Image 1: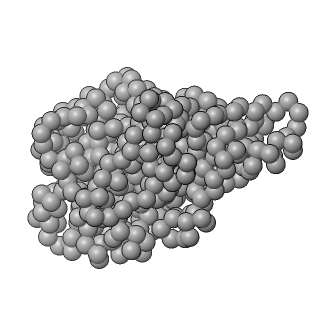
Image 2 (image 1 turned 45 degrees about the vertical axis):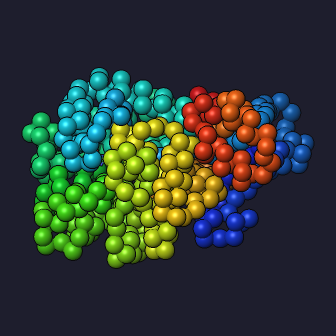
Image 3 (image 1 turned 180 degrees about the vertical axis):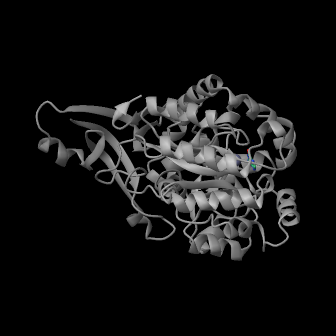
Length: 428
Ligand code: GUN
Ligand code: ZN
């Protein structure tokens, strides 16, 4: 079935940091997005495409806004939704005091479903249509998440946390049960509808070498699943990893020795990486999830985007709820911009919106499937609203250029400025 959406249209074709700016995006002031059976069929100027549409095709017009691909959140914890904004600690104490006790509740499938329902509604309200999501150690947490995501027809990636040391007994699995439970979840859910599985060791401190090796074994046995973990977020964490794994050459090398790097591996944070680690991430085609809201909230540090770019590391944005303090990708872009200001670097609005859409898709090895309006891509898209709040409305009256409009959206925008979210062409 065909349908069409008319309005101002923007999507990215390439990384603005790698190609000439004008080659990195397509922008149509009065564009038409034609969708066939939930997939992008064609995009172009409305004046050219409208006359070619068969009679009776429904055309929805969005005015005073911008139609673009849905945002992609490359690192977020759904079980931490209800502990967002927990006061006063940096990473390791924050995990111990707040996170672990909260995650305990996810042994209960019904609790997981309720939180997943709320979490996914928040994501969609914020214009995020795909996310790479942590569960908890309990297989029920992933069962709950996928059940709800499947009902909503979403493209979502999730995995059961692996953690067998340095954590409370009530949150501990073993190398073997972690392997077995993950394997069973992969068999049941990976590639079911739009769902995909991520093998999810929490981070090196809570995983024995045996557990990390088993994760590597599982990844080798299932090369189309993801690997999702944390890396070099906080200085005390890094010192602890060096103590726990004296035979490794550093934090990333712990994962590398267990064969966890690759095209579908996503490492959250990477705030304090050596050049040699960035180089290794780049040459293995691994990705980093840049989580500025979380990095500021936990006082972890300022992500070095230029270092990642220099070594050609794939980067996407992550909210990292509940260490991040917002579901909104627009607000996350705001925080990202400010982290780069503190490093005396300019993060352009084109680069920001690229990272939130196509950059995220590439980080997740999903380009061509989501992230832009290439023919055949899944039509998950959003409509941003220039007039949703009086302040945004006023500010927009003084600007004409796309670059400025994008910058204002990213500085003043949040959930209120997401007028509509569409999944496979259908408004939700
Ligand atoms: N490192 C290990 N676990 C976590 C977590 O839950 N959140 C963050 N931000 N970092 C982590
Ligand atoms: Zn995290």
